[in-house]
Length: 81
Picture 1: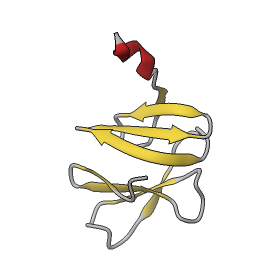
Picture 2: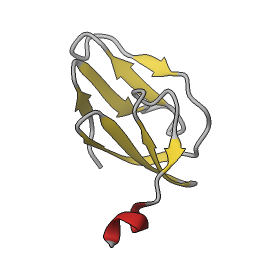
Picture 3: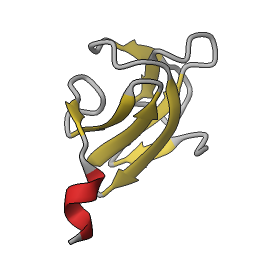
């Protein structure tokens, strides 16, 4: 599991206290705040591709282009063609 994901100037990580939440930092990790987003399960892994954040959770795979604020289900099998 990636410990911290860098997207632009933002750092994103799975909360150490609650795996159902993500935390974001705008100041190189000096301080962190919880990202308010809809519940998509407990996060187990994060990844990125450019400005898209990908998450594997207990409820499936999701992607976000809003730094984790909103999520859509990610159907990775459609890209295997």
